[in-house]
Amino acid sequence: MMTRHRLTISYMAFVLHRLSGIGLICFLPFHFLVLGLGLEGEAALDNMLAYTDQPLIKLGEYILVILFSLHLLLGIRVLIIEWMPWPDRADGQGGLRAGWIFAALGIALILGWIFIDGVIA
Image (cartoon, rainbow, N blue to C red; front, side):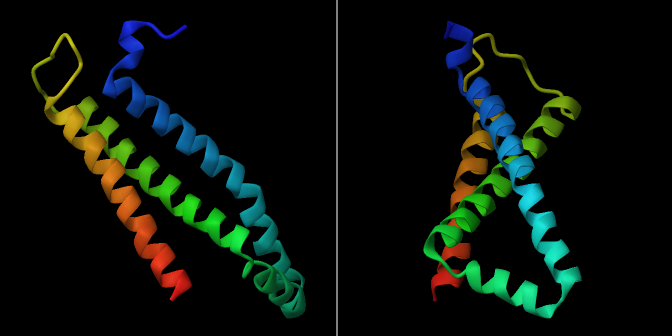
């Protein structure tokens, strides 16, 4: 049930941080699989790297960069909340929290765009 306190920007940042972490955890087995193929030999790794040239895999890499950027920046936001003193606002809006949330979203999208621009070019 969506209550009023769950509609704040701080709660949405909490959800984004958790979902990006879950997305990164889902990526890890595939990453270890590719690393394991490198141990099996050069041919197996080359076949997998050729497979990664597909557009759907490139989209997945783009999403992965955005997830990593979001998780990193929203994690920094959590550290700032833990360590920095600031006035507590009852509505949970604005201030340093909102600035970090919008900055994290913006930087994650910019890094994703830079990544996809380098992959396509």
